[in-house]
Image (cartoon, rainbow, N blue to C red; front, side, top):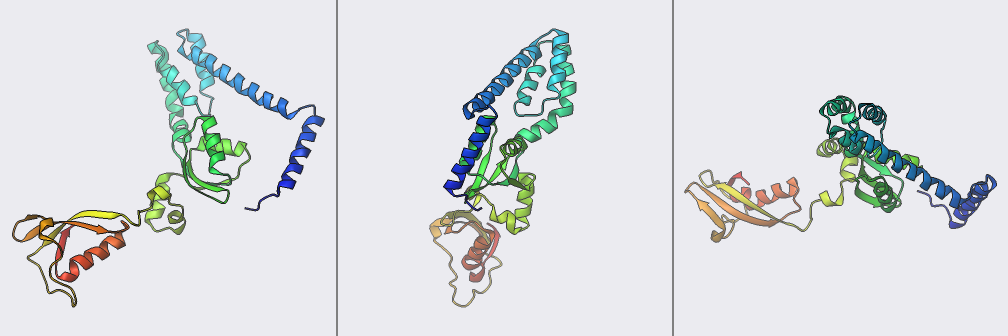
Length: 270
């Protein structure tokens, strides 16, 4: 992404400040206006929560109708207030309405999409925190961040005029693509899901001694220390195998071939 020179950014800020002043709105006043809107929203939420706790049918039903139209973070918390009303009749009314919106609200708040966002991870985390939403950063490079982001947070990012591309609609979609070997899906695998390249694997190899064949040229017939044999029933042994591997299927298969197959042994389980 092309970076804008500092001088150009300062010039843009100066022009913006001039426009705000010309319209009679100072930057400080604009910040105060944002704060006022936030305070009004908090106040209205508190009032709505109180009405949803009320056993007065008219107040409850009016607030329930308003709640049914709310589609934003925090709506599920308000629904919990309505669903826990002490009046069983009103709780039933709340449940009937809640079933119509539950799936969509839960998806938008809790089911992340995988997106590539034109912003730093710090900026995205700050916006997520202010909205009370969870996010998992997968990687961040050169001003772009790949993350698992709920739809509500993507809406916030759009409102902040941040560009993003949704790569996969769900984590499950990404997992399926990666299992198929899709190059894009593999490329964005988060570091915490990457195999440790220097890790040790610990496996129990169940070796069938009865089907032993001749070892390949250059390979000895023994494959380890007797003290690592855990069980021996005459035709099979259970062998404790500790070896270096990156955890990939190819790496493990290669070890089995070198340690057992080329020595004439058949591994029944590993």
